[in-house]
Length: 307
Image 1 (tube, rainbow, N blue to C red):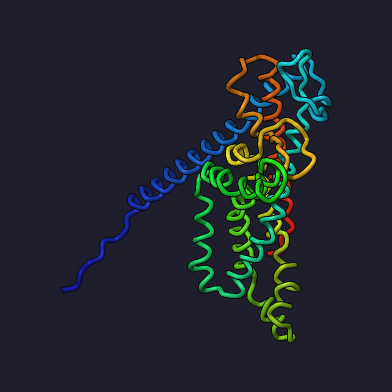
Image 2: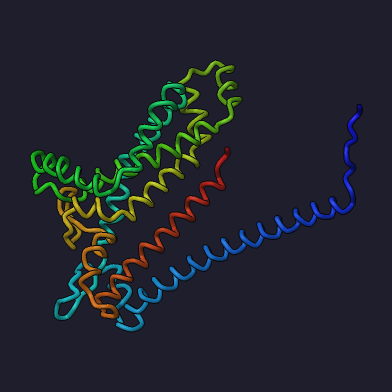
């Protein structure tokens, strides 16, 4: 006996259409609220940090050029001095040195995993490297304090604490970030480019440094900038091995300090609203502005990417 298929009535169609309309409306409202919440949070954070940081100049009448270019940091002195240039120099020197150490390693590791041994690299090496990103920063700092600092003390003059120790610890910390971005960039390269290079008689190494690297260079530089941004904002690991001296070091093996270490070491010992506290908020504002600069650089590099 043949089965009769119930026909779809107009009422059922209108009900289904109404359900889809309600689901779409709820989704749009929820998404809009999430975006507005994120935007409001960012604006509130920027306003809070900027209002505290600018109080140093408008309320406490500290000269902006003294803060950015002064060499002496003595908030409790008579008269007090708020020269933050040693901290700015320490942050940039450790971050850039860490990037110089980690960038060649990360690019070479990604080339090895994608171009040389793709099966073994993607299956075993990449997960191992990505595991490094999950290790807490205090562990890196403790290893640097227990291994790197004594090693530098035995080989080079000084106590082992300094810019070199901080840069080496940071280079290990940012290596997974750079390697992951570089690996994804190389993996997304169209196969036709490499096949065309091989068809013209190029060897594997000629294809790598004449086709693969130039094509993915903006994406590779994006990973480098992201690594610098993370190193610039790192506090605990660097604080444990850099020595925390508010002076411009004369060598890589002398103690120095960074913006983050200056904030974390002094913020709990200052009274809210005091000149010293406001100066620390000014250091935090400098960190925030540099983060925005790194984000803009990343967006610019992504716009230039050929992939």
